[in-house]
Amino acid sequence: MDPTYPPEAQVYREKVQAFLAEHLPPDWAGIGALDRDDAVAFTSQWRNTLRDNGFLATSWPEAYGGSGLTALEQVILAEELQRAGVPAGGMNDVFSIQMVGNTILQWGTDEQKRHFIPRILSGEDVWCQGYSEPGAGSDLGNVGCRAALDGDEWVINGQKIWTSAGHLANWIFVLTRTDPDAPKHKGITFLLCPMDQPGVEVRPIEMISGDSEFNEVFFTDARCPKENVVGEVNGGWAVAMTLLGYERGEAAATFPLMFRTELDRLVALAQERGATDDPVVRQGLARAHTQVELLRYLGLRSLTQFLGGHQPGPEASTFKLAWSEHHRRVTELAIDVLGADAMVPSGRWPASSFQTDDPGAPNDSASWVGTFYNARAGTIYAGSSEIQRNIIGEIVLGLPKEPRGADPGSWREQQGGRS
Ligand SMILES: Cc1cc2nc3c(=O)[nH]c(=O)nc-3n(C[C@H](O)[C@H](O)[C@H](O)COP(=O)(O)OP(=O)(O)OC[C@H]3O[C@@H](n4cnc5c(N)ncnc54)[C@H](O)[C@@H]3O)c2cc1C
Image (cartoon, rainbow, N blue to C red; front, side, top):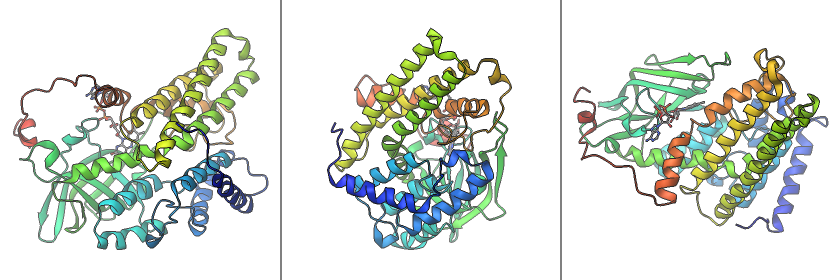
């Protein structure tokens, strides 16, 4: 691990800081200080500002409209945006740019790159992720949503679930079962499907907070063109795994900063409420401080690799496990500090269901109760804690693998021959 940046980092950092000073209001306190509607409006306009100044899709080659930043510049930019409390893109860009855009650039045909990449940047196409199903989450290879060729089109039938921001998207990338008679990981195809058609129905799922940020998506004879396959027909598993690598890749630079800001807010909350004399709270805060420092060092280790030109490997699981378990514990501590007030939360709720509340958010009880709910989801999405522990045990530490039974046969046989 090398915890220092080379001298050119400072030059680029000052360039980003000058851009932020020019484009943010002088009294800017972070997006969390805006009310929800204003935050949504700001995010959409800010995305355009980032794009027009070459700060969106920063890893993409300039030939495809990206800004072709070096790995070091990408990291510095992400850090400065995080420090300034502004988003690094639009609401769905984690799916549009980070996941499917990167995947199309790696696996797509020239025609797919020419067609889809500019439309992602312009915001004309907004994407969501159609991976999970009621019977396929941790065991993603079990997907049963079917696709079959009918002339020049794929016809899709089945269901996806937990589709984050699916109600805001007009395209979905779907893992489909195209050969049920092959072993389960070998009969999967990665399709790009327009959602604006009668065969695609999006049903919101209401969460414990009352918000609906994710959805069920039902496909009933939905159609997409034959050429909307990414990678090989029945070779979608490799494409799906590439995409998940992008899902886990970017947090190393920004999460330690984000969790430090959150811990500072929690200390302020404990001070406001006179809880810092309580030895149990003090112990919890000290533990949280230690965890945030560990995250910082884990992040620096990943960054050293990234800056050296390597993509994060299975050890990214250590980071995912560490941040998500830390976040659960630290938000439980916040609930302890709030005491009975946590039962009647008031004030501003977090605007998003992911990770911490936004920088600049008021230290309201609703902010902490909402973040406490979100933290539970963090140990499930992008691979649950149990799955991360399996990866760490089996792949990073080389411990004996879970016993596997006899050859399970084809996907159809595993379903009892019914599907
Ligand atoms: C907030 C949120 C947003 C999401 N957004 C999306 C999205 O946009 N698109 C999408 O496709 N999906 C999305 N997901 C779904 C997510 O990927 C799945 O929830 C996750 O993969 C777990 O799958 P599951 O819910 O089916 O649980 P299951 O796989 O059924 O797991 C149930 C429990 O069993 C444990 N378990 C399972 N297998 C093992 C094993 N081999 N060893 C030990 N323990 C095991 C799990 O850890 C878990 O505790 C989202 C989920 C959440 C919470």
